[in-house]
Image (tube, rainbow, N blue to C red; front, side, top):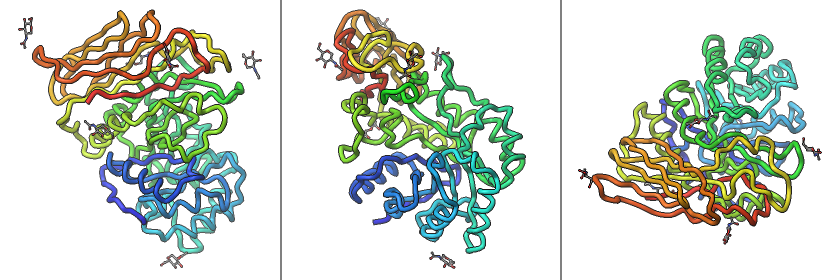
Length: 407
Ligand SMILES: *[C@@H]1O[C@H](CO)[C@@H](O)[C@H](O)[C@H]1NC(C)=O
Ligand SMILES: *[C@@H]1O[C@H](CO)[C@@H](O)[C@H](O)[C@H]1NC(C)=O
Ligand SMILES: *[C@@H]1O[C@H](CO)[C@@H](O)[C@H](O)[C@H]1NC(C)=O
Ligand SMILES: *[C@@H]1O[C@H](CO)[C@@H](O)[C@H](O)[C@H]1NC(C)=O
Ligand SMILES: *[C@@H]1O[C@H](CO)[C@@H](O)[C@H](O)[C@H]1NC(C)=O
Ligand SMILES: *[C@@H]1O[C@H](CO)[C@@H](O)[C@H](O)[C@H]1NC(C)=O
C-alpha cells in the first residue's frame, strides 16, 4: 500500500510523525492521504530503539526520512542495520541521490560516532546525507563551532520553532546563522522547522511549559517563505499530542497516557492544516497562492491565563500567552473581518491573501466567539466557535487552543 508523491524542486515540506505505536495500515493510509492533500511530501518518523514499533511501520509511509531520536540510547550497529534495511526503498527521501538521515539531538555522541556511522554505511554502498537536529546548537554565535566540531555532518535541522522561554516572538537569527554555515561549507540541506504551538503539562516541573505561540502559525511561515527560504521545511509535528503541536487528527487509536487527554481531547487542530496548505503552496511555488474560497481560521484557549484550576499547576511561562481569540483570514479579495466575543470586538480591513487579527477575552463568563467576513457591506460568511471561554470551573491547566474555521 505504499503511496508515492512527487517531491517538488522548490523545496520539500516534511512533517514529524510520532505516536504511531498503535497505528494500523488504515491509519497510515488516512494520514498520508490527508497530508499529501495539503502538499506535504513526506513524514519523518522518529526512531527510538532498534526493533521499535515505529520502524516496522516506516515502509508504509509515502515518502519518508529517518529521524533518529538520539535522546534514547543507540548503538551505531543498530542504526546501521535500520538504514540498510530501508535504504533501497523507493519511498526513502533522498537529497543529491543520497538517503537523508536526520535526528533529534545526538551531539553528545561526538563526531567520531557520526563519521563511523556514515563510513560503515558507505562501505555497504549506502551514501547518506546527515542533517541532524543537534538541539544544543541554538545560539547563532555557535554556528561556526558546529561546523568545526562536526566535520561529519552534511546539513542541519534547526529544531527550534518556538521562542526560548521568553515573552517575545521568535526571530530568524538562529535559522539564518545555521543556514549560512551549511551553505558555505557543506552540500546537505538546511532544514527549518515550523510549528503552530508549544504547550505540555504532564505533571512535573520539567514537563510543564508553554511557549508564546499566539501568532506563531502565521509569522513563522512568513519567516520561512520571505526571510529564510530553507531547502526543506519540516512541520513540527503531525501527531505529537502531548506538546500540543499536532496538525493531524486526534487519533483514538493512540494512547495519550493519563494527563495529556486533559488538554488534547476536545481540542482538534484540523483547520490549522488549511493554514499550512496555503503556506506550503506559497513556499513551493514562490508566489502567494490565489485564494478562491474565503475562510477565517481561528484559535483560542478555554480559560484566561490567570484562572485557578482545580488540578495541576500552571505551566512555566503561563503569563506569556495573550488572553485573546486569534483569527487568520485567507481571502480572495479585500474584506472587513470582524471578531466578537462577549462585549469585546475587533475588526480589520483584511487584504486578499493572509492576514491576522485578534480580540481580547471578555470579562463575561462562558462566551463563544462570533466571526464575520464582510465585503461591500454584505456579510459573506459568518459563524461561531464552539468552545466557551470560561472564567471559572477549570479542572486542569490547559493552554492548548481549540481551532475553528469559518468557510
Ligand atoms: C540495495 O541496492 C544495492 C544496489 O543495487 C545492492 O547492492 C544492495 O544489496 C541492496 N540492499 C538491500 C538491503 O537490498
Ligand atoms: C508578536 O507578534 C504579534 C504579531 O504577529 C504582535 O501582535 C505581538 O505583540 C508580538 N508579541 C510580542 C511579545 O512582541
Ligand atoms: C516546581 O517549581 C515550583 C516553582 O519553581 C516549586 O515551588 C515546586 O516545588 C517545584 N515542584 C517540583 C515537584 O519540583
Ligand atoms: C479547510 O480544511 C477542511 C478540512 O481539511 C476542508 O474540508 C476544507 O475544504 C478546507 N477549506 C478550504 C476553504 O480550503
Ligand atoms: C457601506 O455602507 C456605508 C454606510 O451605510 C456607506 O457609506 C458605504 O458607501 C457603503 N459601502 C459600500 C461599498 O457599499
Ligand atoms: C464552560 O462552561 C460551560 C457552562 O457554562 C460548560 O458547558 C462548558 O463545558 C465549559 N467549558 C469547558 C471547556 O469546560
